[in-house]
Image (cartoon, rainbow, N blue to C red; front, side, top):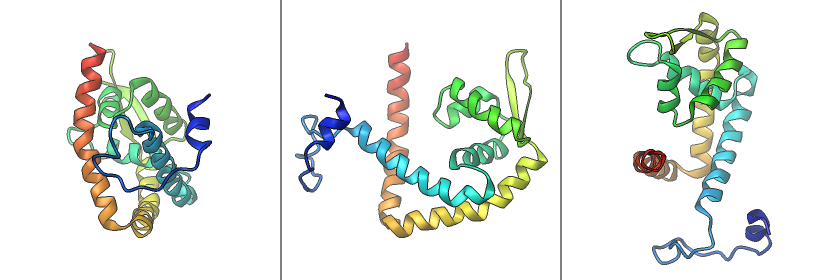
Length: 171
């Protein structure tokens, strides 16, 4: 049976998450739960940002490229900062480049490319920023500011641990 069928063929028993119910033996799949939450939050942002013509991921990518502290970031540096692989980043950048929101220019060495947000991209960020703030406010209204703060703290604590673990397993 597929994992989706396994988890959804039986009604979940409501129970509070405690150290005893969140053990490795728990039938809850952490990956499935995190992806489900991510999809729901992403959909809220995408729906709210839709009038701007940007998806949540595109808005975040443009803002991160524009705000890079040392000037235009390389594709690899941006991928690392956004916790994605270079191939996915290149595919996402292609869409923004075709829309005229970024340019890819030669980097410091012949193999690297830097991401430069164009004037059109900066204008689109300004247009979408108010919508993004609405999405931020809406998710906090729906889930509670305290819950979202706890989630953000949890993510900020877990990302470095998982980043280290994935780097070690790649070696």
